[in-house]
Length: 72
Image (cartoon, rainbow, N blue to C red; front, side, top):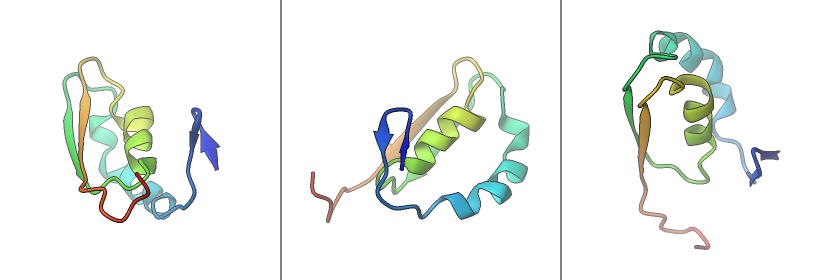
């Protein structure tokens, strides 16, 4: 699957979107929201957070991952 010029090879995330959309709705479009994601794999969830929830001015996402086991 390709989205925003990013190629994803697996999808461990999309099944969570309905729940996360509800749980995180109050953060959408708010200014200066800071999220931390631990374990990013290909970045599918990070891309979703940035495109869907962290849309307010000054909002940001920090991703931490060991990248162990990946090709990179």
